[in-house]
Each structure stands twice: as C-alpha cells, then as structure tokens.
Image (cartoon, rainbow, N blue to C red; front, side, top):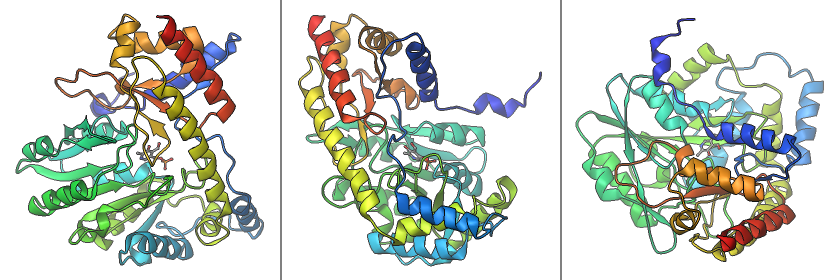
Length: 398
Ligand code: PLP
C-alpha cells in the first residue's frame, strides 16, 4: 500500500501505546496502577446524563447546525464571559466533537505551509503533529524549574520569533507539567503576541480543574480577545472524555472558518449530548464540585507520597490532574538514562504505569534533567497509595 506523503509528518499520542502495554501486562495476571491515563475514572454527573436521555427521547437525534445548537453556543459564550470577563456572543462559538479538534482546525484556518508556529514542549503531542501535518514549521519553546512550579523560558521563546512566525500555541494549566503562568508571565506572552501580531490558540482544557485560587485567561488581557481562540472542553470538568464535546471560542471570522471546517469534517457534533452539556453549564453544579473534591484528595496524597521518594522532586500544582516530578536522581539509582528502560523497569517491579517526558513532544536541545508524568485522574485513592508505596519501596531498595 502506498500512503500519502503527508502522512510522514503526522504524529500521534504515544501515551496510548503505554495503555496497550499496561493492558497486556495486566492480562498476564499482573497488578497495574494506571498513572499513565489522562482519562477520568469518575462517572459523568447524573443531571447531564438525564438531560441527554431526555433529549434523545425528544427526538434530538438528527443533524443539528454545524456550529452547534444555538442554546449551547449561547450558554458557552455566557460561561466564558463570566469566568474571563470577555465579550463573546454565540457567534464566537463553534461547538466541536471534543477539545482536540480545535487544534487542527485552528491550524488549518490560520497557517500556511512554511509558516512558523510556536508550541510548548513538553506539551500535548498533538500540537507538534498537526503543525507539521499541515506543512508548518513547529518551533518549540520550553520550561525551567521555578520556585513553586515550572516557568516558561520566555527569553528563548522571544528569541525564536521570526518574520515567519504566525501562530502561538499556549497551554496554561499545562499537560503534562501542571505549569501555571504567573500574571507577569501571562502578560509577557500577551505583549509578545501583540508586538509580533501572532494569533494564539489558548488551550484551556484544564481551566476549571483547579483546587485553590482562580484561573486567569490570556483572552482577558487587553488586546488579546481579538487575537485568541480558546480551546474549551467538557471532557475534564464534567468527566465527559468519552462523550466527545468541546468548542472553539474566539473572533467571529476565525470561528466562521472553523464552522466551515466542521461542515467538511463531521457535519455537526453529536446532537443530543449538546442538551446534556447545557445542563452541565447551567444546572446543578454539585457534580463538577464532587469531581474536583475527589481529584484534590488524590493530588494531595500523590504529592505527599512522591515527595517522600528518594531521588524524586515534585511540585504541588494547583491545577490539572498531572504531576511531573524530576526523577533524574531516581533514574541514576535505577542505573539508566533511558526513559523507556526506566518506565518498563518500574512497571515490571511494581505495576506502576506512567508516561515519561518522551510522550510529550520532541525533546529540546540540551535537556538534561529527566521527568515522568503521573496522572491521578484514572486511579482511585487506595490504589494511588498502594502503588506509590510500592514504588517508594522499590526506589528505596536500589
Ligand atoms: N488539550 C490538552 C492540554 C489536553 O490534555 C487534552 C486531553 O488530554 C486536550 C486538549 C483534548 O481533550 P478532549 O479532546 O478530550 O477535549
């Protein structure tokens, strides 16, 4: 079979391969502690399920408008405005089958082949994949360890901007690092975007997965609403990963193009679950509150246990459901510099299954420290305790 040349540029989420490996390991009768999953093992709130079933029974089972049903677009605009002090109307919202489609559609709408797009690494691997698949030049920017969390290497980001740089992908409340910009860092990003006339995809998948404080959006800063597209998703806040519902929210001309891409790609997002989503946004909020309480308990325990491990340094991020500890010393103890060797060694010895930095985009030149990602969204608290105590005992034994 001769495939299209452009497929040479298409990346993937290699974390799915870790899931397959963990499943194969478990099928041999081994115990697995699934810290590799970015999925959520908590049920979607009942009021959302009920509203969706009602919509199905009412016959909301045909096609719906390409950009989403007006009531959901309106509810999303109001929700975004309330949390971000923006000025969106339903015309600024294109409903998507998940948050992920916003990435490729943003790039298709705004990037010409050869244009340069800044993106974070470590970061969500689909940015790199989609930029290159559509013929752009993926220009990475990185992070360094700060006092309480990771910080953007703003100096390097600024230095990598050229006359060909057109877009910036920014994921505050970051996967996999749990990084969160300070007000100064976010303002610096806005200043760069305005100075160099960059359009920004602001991936806010974890905007409302936070345990203390308040999230701030880049779109709230002066001059940014008109050059920012927000990636919104129902996946995380409402534990709806498998429902596939999200939205692109941004300037109307871009949203109109994205809606036209919807026509070409999927016609419309699933019709009846959009009614469930309205209930999620406007109805009883005890469901998402309980999800956050569960995640916070898990975070507190996981951070405590990771911090007690030899050769491991872990921040305590206020947002996302990821931890990204520095394991440089632990890997030295384990006698390897190879991420895959370390990951497999840990799984074989303890059943703890994780992703490593290698699953989150190409490494930057000169990266020396080693990091792995623990996701605590797909594992119950008793299993977190059991698994991490086994991991500690293993690292202690080295
Ligand atoms: N953006 C980030 C940073 C993510 O981590 C994810 C999912 O893990 C997504 C976007 C897309 O998620 P979904 O397509 O389920 O909304």
